[in-house]
Image (cartoon, rainbow, N blue to C red; front, top):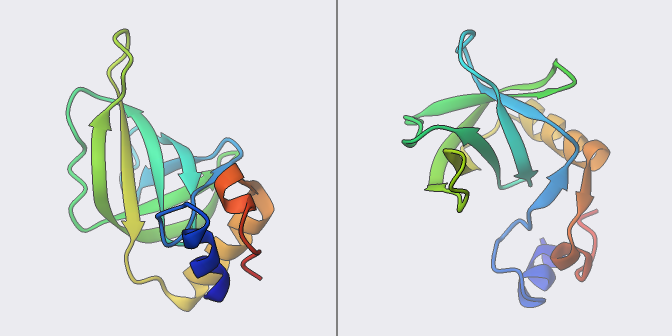
Length: 133
């Protein structure tokens, strides 16, 4: 917890600094016919993803599954939408949705930490603070 405070003082206003993952897809839990979305960043506090649509996704009390190379990594992560905005690209209807995680089970929390440690890189803002370990 102390290292998180140091990172916040170093210029990142978020409680949990975002980090950029390898190519990862997410899908709404139980939505077997919906399109997967491209994860753009993730941390222990939440994540953001990109998708093609003209209007925001209806993500009320939703759960999201996390996939890497089409293999399920973490299932049923509870999420709450923080923002859902159009991107500044006039040729596509691309949106960026940022969500924070709801209450995670102990297993989900351990899986998420292992996923972040194995498949992400710390961004330049987070690199200025102490490590989370």
